[in-house]
Image 1 (cartoon, rainbow, N blue to C red):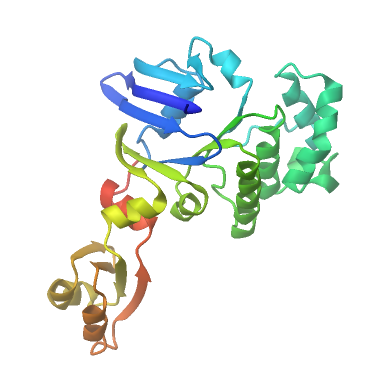
Image 2 (cartoon, rainbow, N blue to C red; image 1 turned 120 degrees about the horizontal axis):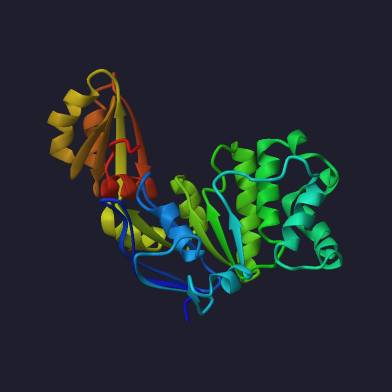
Length: 303
């Protein structure tokens, strides 16, 4: 039985249908990624799954409990990491964990028993009594993740957990999330980092304008929706060369700014043709999840 199961989920604000018949199913012990451009309906979907806003249509069951009617009971077994850190700046690291644990009805003694392991998980053992203002962005994010575990949840909702972090902090958080998965926790992750989704997620749902447009494992999505190889061209004449020579050797070409993307299943003829153009810089790489995402949702900016 899925840990989280939503069917035909709908939510409308004024004339705009933000979520339009979305189906979503999370398997136990897996990381499921919810991807989409800005305004696709990701955060609205998370809020409906948590029972924070009521859907206009559809059915939701979380941990076999109907939501929103029994959302409070479901949330006792859920951990949430919001987009923005909302730690209390007036409290220390330990006080933040202690106060948050009380929201779940936990006794102070039980929370204090858990705090050492939570601090160890977040790599904040030496900062137990530090004020929030003294922590770096990465430390705050790790503490927010540790705080979401204070009730030992079965399911963890992560809304863009590594946005704004440097590469070192992102890798530390990834390591922590892998530990959670190894302990049988179920994770629902939204992210704009395709490499993050590709590294962490067992399954992905890509949504746009409130609808699911693709679903599968990262490898399945790449194999199904995109050519195997990409050659990125740079230089003053990249556009002209791509439209003439590139079109002869690539399956598909896209332009974005000064870069020409040549998608092909047989890269050798394209690479051989480029040997005669030393003025053009190029990068040959395997296709990845970002290529899939851009093909399915487009390259235009979303506000």
